Image 1: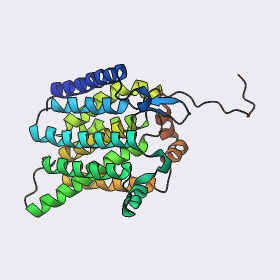
Image 2: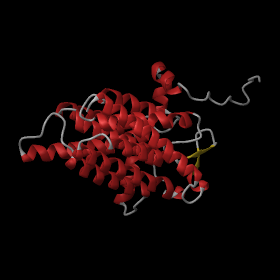
Image 3: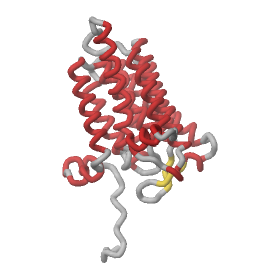
Image 4: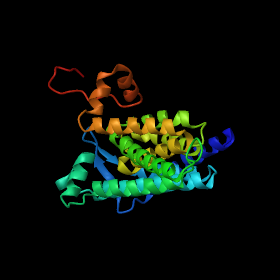
Length: 290
C-alpha cells in the first residue's frame, strides 16, 4: 500500500469517526441517558465514542485495498464492536462480573453474562477473521500448519481486543496505547487497519481526554481487534507468536496486578499516561489551599 493510500485511510477513518459521533450526538439511539455512565471521578461520560470509533475504523479499512485483508479486518472489528456494545448497554450491573476469569467462571455455572457473550462472540468473529486473512510472511505450506496459524491468529485478534479494553480505565490511555502499537505496523501489509486506528484515535482523543467521552467495551474492543488483525496481516509467524505470548501474559497478569498501579509507579509510563489529561481532583481534608 502506497504512502498516499495510507494517508487516505487515516483521513477517512478520522472524518468518519467525527461524522458518526456528531450523528449519534444529534439523535442518540434510545436517548442520551442510555449512553451515559459515571467515570472514575464520579462525573457523567458518554459511551457514544465507542460506536463512532468502530464506524471510523471500518470506513478507513474499506478504502485500504486488498479484498481479503479488508474482509478479515471488517469481520474482526464489526464483531468486536458489536459484542462490546451489547456488554456496554445490557450489562446487569446488579450482578456485575469482572475479568475474563469471572465471566468464564459464570459460564461454567450455566450463567451467560453479557461479558461471557462478548468473549464468545469476539472469539468467533476473530476465528472467522483469521481464516479470511492472508497471513503475514507468506501462506503456510501444509494444511496442518495453516490450521495452527489460523487458531493462533484468532487468539491474537481476540486477545488484543480484550487487552485494549483492559486499558480503558483512564481518559486517553487505551487510545494512546493503541496508537503506539499501530505506528510500527503502518508500513507493513497490515497498514490499512493500523492507519485506520490512528485516524480514528486522532479524532476521538480530544473528547476522551476531556472526559466527556469514553471508548467503552465497544470502541476499545474494536480498536484492539483492528490492531490484532494488523499484526496478523503484516508480520511473520515468529512475530505473531511472540505478540500472542505478550498478550496472553499481560492478560493473565491483569487478573492479579492493577495496570493503573503499575503505571502510576513507573515515571515514564505515568507521564505518558497523564499527558493531555485533566489534573487529578484535589483531595479534601488535607490542608490544601485554594
